[in-house]
Image (cartoon, rainbow, N blue to C red; front, top):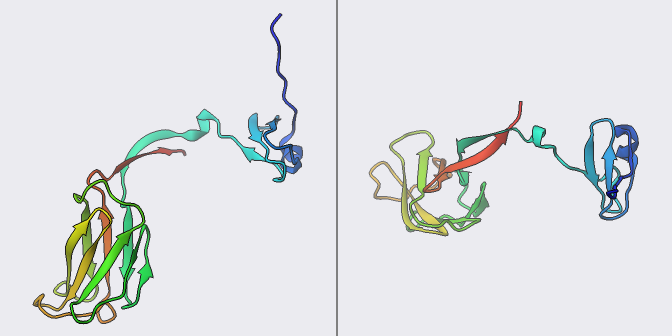
Length: 165
């Protein structure tokens, strides 16, 4: 006869309170989920069932984004930027994670007037430089005067995610 493994289990209410031993696996007999314990967390860590993962869909998503309205260094989503250089109008943006190539896109918009410029230059896999310029694109005009935003998309901006109802 084959060996049988039976795990400790109880209702959801009781399992929520259980502090199991490190690496112990228990069964929530209300929802029929497994939980892995670490020796200190009440209820352990619930594992997701395949039916709860959802349907994979492809989305287009940026890897970095920032709204800059200061001349000082700052942090955006997936990036940081250095201080504004009033002599050149430049500000260096650095990505949190290097890109595989420089074929990424930087979509940008300057607040107040579309004629105020955010010129993208010096692209590398680690980031780029923004030149903040006036309506002619020849003189510096800082982000405090006219803030701006950018969104960066990878050369292949598609990601597969699981969607549940």
